[in-house]
Length: 454
Image 1 (tube, rainbow, N blue to C red):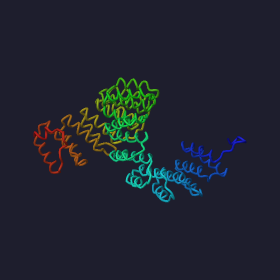
Image 2: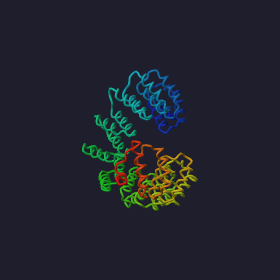
Image 3: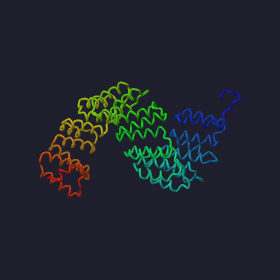
Image 4: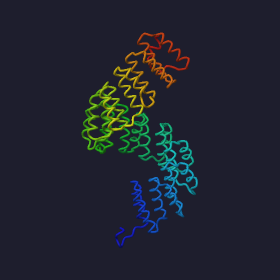
């Protein structure tokens, strides 16, 4: 365009060009275009200005963005909203809120931007207060709040807002459904799906991924088969990576490993998620050695494992009592791949040693950990003490857990089971008395024969 004699870029051309730079965080190219805008004398145009503010905000050059904002004489709601979003992007919620309060007129878009800011930084009470004060709320307002509640695990509030919304698009349905799936309420997610169908709302691919996530948690093969049939009959592209990965995960966790393997091998492009789904499925269904083979195959194909994949394979080794393989992989992760080790990783190793009967080695590992062990690591070892009837180590671990989790009655129950297995009924009675003195009650269903038959 610039080389053409008859065509001159204007205030309608440049915003699209600047937006392209902001989408890929191309700050250097954006500054070059900014220089051209100044040369053409259109840098104060509101549409050009808002695109520049968006660029500098996303590239975290907020001072440049504010300078442009201050130099625009006639600001509309788009300019104000772009500047507010810029402050949100760099994490300056205080300035974003101050600017929002200075706006001469608050339209819905600026209110939504502030709600997103509150949600992003975990201030749901602030988001709710602003949401309630808005005279008009659109579907984006409701979706943002529902998504915020879902991320905080408050699905009761999310459902309450969903029922209040009069305009429900597919994104709003998806926010609620994925919230249930991500918060371990798969039955509710399935109910939402059926509610959608009853209202003649056609689910999209993201809804189906949430439904498959719910099926994975439920482990219901009949439902998994129905979901896959439904997708085939309704022209969903099963070869898309995120859909194919979800299908592999669903079939693997629902017990259809043959189907999961077939889908996995047929994927046009495998990823870390699909590999982890296969490894976890094999682990759940007692195929620990095959899970290790898949993990090695994953490494051979050039995938770099992360902390999640390391926990999955260590758990697989623990379930199958593959001590040698577990430590081989653990050492490989630290020496070759530099995975940042967490207490969860060490807890997996403790569980691996404990299940294999190497209680003293597991105990020494906990005491030598470079990071502070959490209750999960101690709890894994206590469970191993119960499995192998080791009273001495069990008592030491229990005393540690009583300090870390004074209100967790489960630890008392496990120690009681260890005593009961050794016919030390006096110790069972003393432990029950200790719980009573602390005002603790036994968890219903936990070894009731021990507590009722000392």
